Length: 502
Image 1 (cartoon, one colour):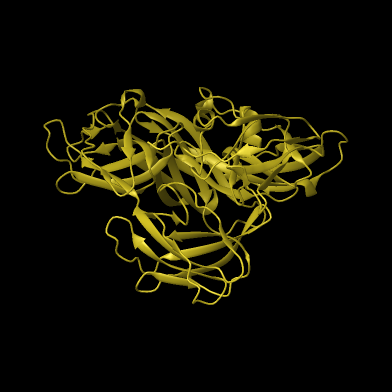
Image 2 (cartoon, rainbow, N blue to C red):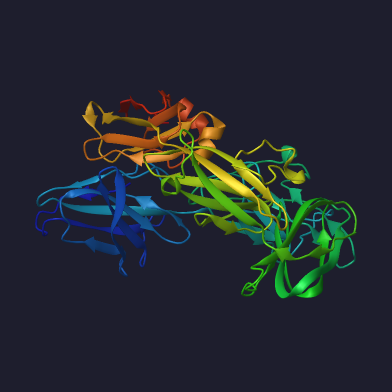
């Protein structure tokens, strides 16, 4: 818990305190403490410092206002002033006049999963890679570890939640192999067991017995203009890399049966005439294979903005981003220029951040929508599939008639300044266009505002309890349903939600 005390002997406008480890109570020196100011409905960084050797910090000469206080440290979950639980959001500090505050921030260690990797005779398997995934599909890697000489592994730095644990494919010295295997001993995710992770604790005895099976090798030749390239082989257990000179040969061994993608991208400065060079191929491995590739210039992606009502260019209305998606997860978001971009072949998800007076209405493209490996998945209307070369086009349609939502957050009949407000589109396509869950803060009077929304039905809830609530959590908390119409502003007042005490 966080302690608060007034200290009138100190100068006005001061926030001081100490950062402690939750379990031991020892000071955490050199921890990062961040002070943010609530300005209207937005949050701006006010000051950042590190604790001294005794774990203490002081923010002095602060003007009147509303503030948020957070302590951060590698290997620990963030601690926030005013949070009710270890994982909840912090409350707002209101400074006025000569008010001063002392805050005790207790940080909890991130969780870990530990266990043993054993062979078919229950003997330790040292040197075995173990991968931890978030409990959602497609699989997203959350951490990775290696078993020691006792077969014991430990994967730390995990946020609280549920995870899958899986060993990676491995080729043994005698030529035999182990297949990727979920805890406790399953090749299929449906037959695996989820592992619950909590702060300040290890989830132990998560043993895995890898299944024996035949592993394969993949090789081939890469042709094209002389260049140094990186070859990346991707599966749902991770990525393997090789660097070669073109023309040249590559080779990967110890591959388990399954879907794979291979990316080839030039690693040096792009040639002035052709730009960056690359190649891409997707395939299923169930035998030794040869895949020959030729590097060619990246596809030139043309970008167009349209007004749904008038057809005029609206480049000032949105900023576009692209994120590569492969079998191992999502890459970083790349900001796209206004008219043309060069992206490597493969699958990309396009997103848009719009100005408040617009909303992202639709996306159309002359590129392929689906790859062969994605046919079994639900179609994502914002994904495009770029093949080698070509000059495909993406048309982003904006509307200058967005919906808006506003209201007041109250707790026990009084406005709740700085309260987080979550907005969740019930339509999956609209949710994709909004880049998922939207969150805003109420201002000093408890008033919140959402702009740039597409019409439709939304769940809206205000709470300090969560950072990223799911649809199920919002429904359980009886979130309000708001129906938004194009070009109109809807009003929805909210009562601050608190989880019932266990």
